[in-house]
Length: 540
Image 1 (cartoon, one colour):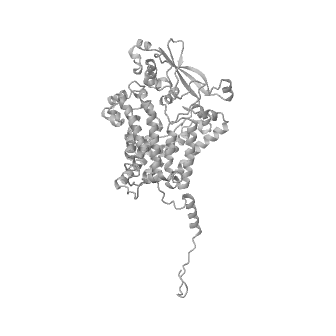
Image 2 (spheres, rainbow, N blue to C red):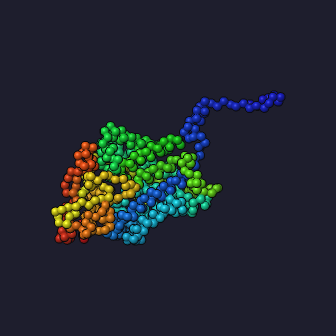
Image 3 (cartoon, rainbow, N blue to C red):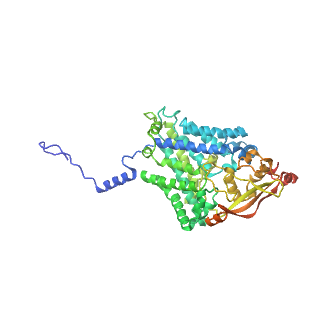
């Protein structure tokens, strides 16, 4: 207190801080850092959107060269026929059940336009030119392709890109050109929705591994099989497969710990959140190095960017980029209508995500019927999706060898872009490129030809020498004219070890024939069958 004697100089006594408050202050500084009570996310948004544009570019770019062979008029699952079928079955409801710009036209030129337009929109997003419109357009174009892609665009990363891209529309600033106009601050609501998406992606991936009842995850031997049986392994997978069982058990345990525990650190204080980002990014890099999962791992890493704030990114981004990302001062306030809309968006997404999370955590609890009805109505837009890769680990690797012959005696194998075939051919690194036929061949080997809707058509297209379908393969062994006969044989593949590789001229695989996957057919044999016995996809 001030001195009561006016002859003495004025002094002020400083009260002693309670020990508990001082301790809490030190903990707060340790968890958040000095002066980071209100972190900024302008650079975070800038980097996130630029990297998302690169993911879109990869997705549209790799699809453009395959689209005609997959769903074109002479492809494996023609989009025009698919849309005609659903319209006949559903009537006007088909437009809501399968929202796509392809309703205007599903011709080959239109499919190319959707891919090419998506590439342009991705480039605009990367260049920060009309980012809000570019993000919205890229999402709409990719949604249009996914909803007509049938088996070939039903992968979880396609759904993840759509869900991430939808949120990015409301995260993007509304300016036209970079650095020219003041920006609105990044929406904290959408920032947390992106973090919630990352949490669901990783946590659900861990939960399904345990709830599936698969013994390999429970006894920690899953990765002893994974490197060998995954769809498209990398060369590194062969070497890791040779390591002792203890390594595989420890790495399996590490995967489960990261997927089940690290996601909760997403909601922790600032510095612990950075630790979560480190674990999640490390896991994705490990998966990326050992297998080809297209853009999935890169997209997950991009989602991890939202766990960092500007103060961290300022240490790695050049000053010129920082000035460009900030835009001219002062920043514009966020319009009231946009804040209300993002609030409604958050409420809807949190409501819908409960339909996938609640049954896993509390199976006896049921969400209200109206919530499930809303989820079904919005499902075609892929705003909220369920995730969980490798819930059941495959322990064997069936492979399909497709062959053609001119005389029925000498058979020549068709070679795919990345899937195993020739046992001496090394596994490849091709991600983020996505060879969609190769991926579906992995599923086809597991499920059988009778349960694979497109495989009959694939064999017919080989007999016809379809250029669009042949472009999906790694070359054409019959360049002069199509083969007269085709067949498919099922093999069991497994990695060699170091000794086997030395004894077999460096073979990466060993193969054992299992039986016939698809019998020998020719165009003549199909035409001789009665019409009622020939599947529609096999009619020339």
